[in-house]
Image (cartoon, rainbow, N blue to C red; front, side, top):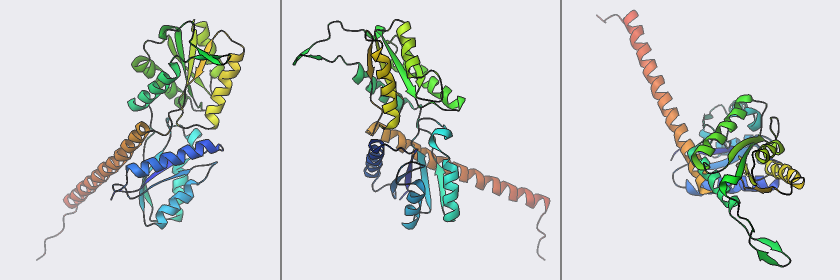
Length: 296
């Protein structure tokens, strides 16, 4: 049986986000049943269960080595919290605890595919409800007249913001080449904000703009994205603004997490092999410098 998988969330005060995180932990537990010793989850801050409690629970069940996987699309420590520091404190309380840390989930090609699915759902022409009946949209809007605003969390870290901008470009070239443009915006801490991204699309001539959250789960961040988009739309009635759903709890996201788990274990095994080789080489060199005298 392989080591437990510990999923780490950044925390949220929104019950919807906590519930979706819990459902995703359950999905992974079912997927890995019989292969991985346990699957658990915890939050760095702002929600229950706290990460420290989840670690303590795994140790109490006899697990002393685990794979910690942050549920984060970027490597932004400011957004997710000090995971290494939190795990270091856990190791002080549980000296036998060891762990391998998985890398962020994005920008994996499968994450881009999930974004493309959310975009397609939002772009689908929907009938309009007028006086008790549904009527079709009078003028279909072509993809070439439609723009996309990919919205990340935003961070004080310029490298984290640049990573989101890179995802926008990758997404445009691989999954949205027919669209007018794919612009980048941020919820906070960086420019442009959602209104700024929408305004740029309007000035480029877009008749429809789809706001695409680069966010894993529903919660407070998604509500802020929608609120900013709706506020902008209230002052620009001629522009069709739509908001796509988050990536969410799904099999595609589970596939990426499982691959990160496998990768972390393989990396740990390779590191151990290199360490053993280096130790053997050092021992050999010491024996050459300080040969052991033969017994008479």
